[in-house]
Length: 299
Image (cartoon, rainbow, N blue to C red; front, side, top):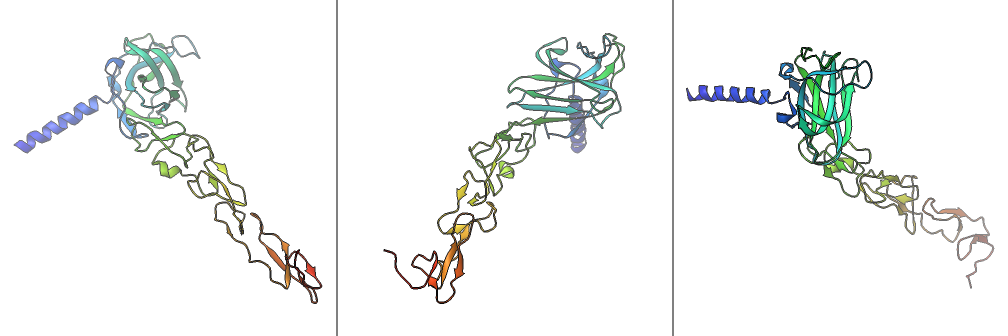
């Protein structure tokens, strides 16, 4: 009997949790949580109110009906991305609002999304940290003032929060803060997910300013830049870039030329020493820079 009661309680809790997955009003809108990019099921019949915002293009009074509402407060600045593309058959519209919650919607309209992919919608906007945003998913309505406009069928929506350059979504959870990546990483394109080590600068490039938010720079031949490095170091004395790749370490130049040869090419960061044999009776001079007829020492 105790097990049966526990099972019933769990079912009730699960149903209650699902019912809280969306709201008709910003006044009690649940926050988005969980995996970034996951498809989230919704119950269309929960929507009650038509959006007060009018679509700027098209005829008058075109807007959204029987909207579902969620809220999201980012801990860092970044980009909101929400879509129904490929997930529903309804003709959907989306609205992003902020400000005070008045009459079930935010007082500031930040963005409208409509017909981004056929009849479905994708909303994407850069947002500020610590601001409450309301995300409204609505059924398209030719007359947003008509309270009898049809509502949404059940469906799915995908919500993402994309971290800015210099940071990463380390745990792929939308409710946790983005993590700043340190020197030796490159997250300059933003929207990164995973540990910072996933974005270590590759060997051959270097984090020239120790700032992950700026792009790494290629280290030219004659130098060496190890992975996750912040410097591009010229090959040292008696070493050279044997493969013209700064991704590999410099190697030692050929040993000094013998007495029977002269140095026809120097050891430099981009070239190996070349020793050319002297033809008898010539032999290398004291500096091995040329062939001479008799050995002499430099003064």
